[in-house]
Image (cartoon, rainbow, N blue to C red; front, top):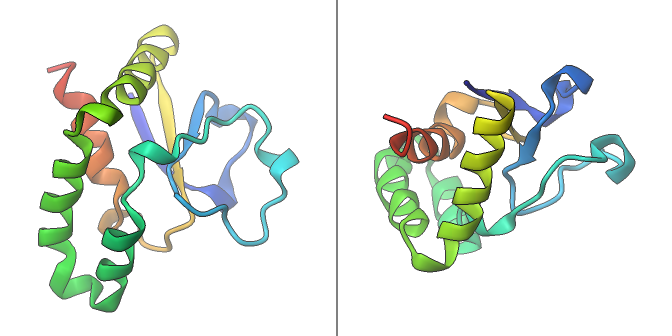
Length: 119
């Protein structure tokens, strides 16, 4: 199972976990996320992230399409496979973000792409 969670509520029960943000979350010490993977390649590009923030509600559907396209790039496939293998080994993987509203963030898209291989 894939779990989506804000990084600010992360605890030891959430391992294994991936920090799925391109930027390190404000106010979080790196030692607090010791053992958490941070694979920037599977996060939205800076350009796409900044574009979404201009008008999150109006841009979200197009953001999802563009992010899914970024995740289909050959350069990202090894990292996605690493995450899928981690999920299989532990039967779970927690995807972490600093986004306030997870449902309208990139995490549901990443979760969907990771699950596509399973189904």
